[in-house]
Amino acid sequence: MRTKRLLRAGLMGGLVLAGWLAEARTIVLDARQLERAAGLEASAPRHGWAMTREGTHSWANVIHAGLLDLTRGRCFLFAFSLADIPKGHRITHAELVLPISTWWGTEPRFYLWRVLAEWGHGVCWDYRLVGDKRLEWTRPGAAGMGSDRAARPTAIVRLTEAGSVVINVTEDLDLWQRGAAAQQGWLLSVEDPDVTIRFPSPLYNEASSWKLRISFEPEAMP
Image 1 (cartoon, helix red, strand yellow):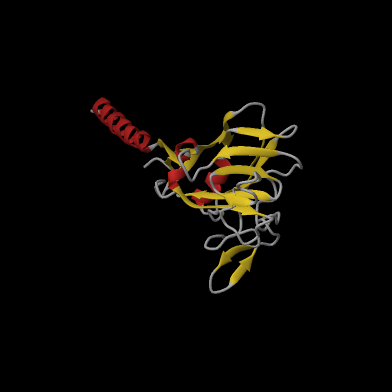
Image 2 (tube, rainbow, N blue to C red; image 1 turned 90 degrees about the horizontal axis):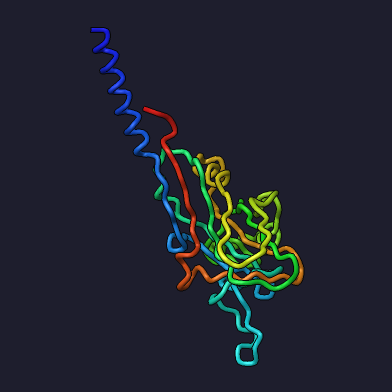
């Protein structure tokens, strides 16, 4: 009888573990799952879709969202919808995959920051929200350390070749999933003078090349 009970307990334990493992999974989001995005430009402080500026004779001083050219004085805000992560699950690993087209300047690098301040409708270089009242960034361009953006970057990425770069963002996703920080997405910036880094725009045909890969599992075994 004792042997039968042990076998039965082992079988039930195995079934429970199998069910728990079945709930652990990985999802891949792309820019089609962005819930918010904005391109902020210092020279167009009330413009929320300024991602590049053309300087040719036919497109002189035209600002548009067809490309994403990061340079000092221009940054990109974006936040993915995390609705597909069930409650009661913890993040085990998360990677942000960003496509790089080309760059100009020496020793190019860009920064990824976790955004702290709430932002949304009407967001631009000067304001983070425009509605019944206008809420300003602590510093224009979401530049306030510890108020607009985290005090330290999630990552500083140095470029050596074009193609996709993979950034570990597990800590940020864990904070958001646990409710330890509000999910306000990320900010991409270039802080060095005379450097421009071009990304394909996530708002057009290259949406699928912007990826957020998230692995998660139940917080505890049943």
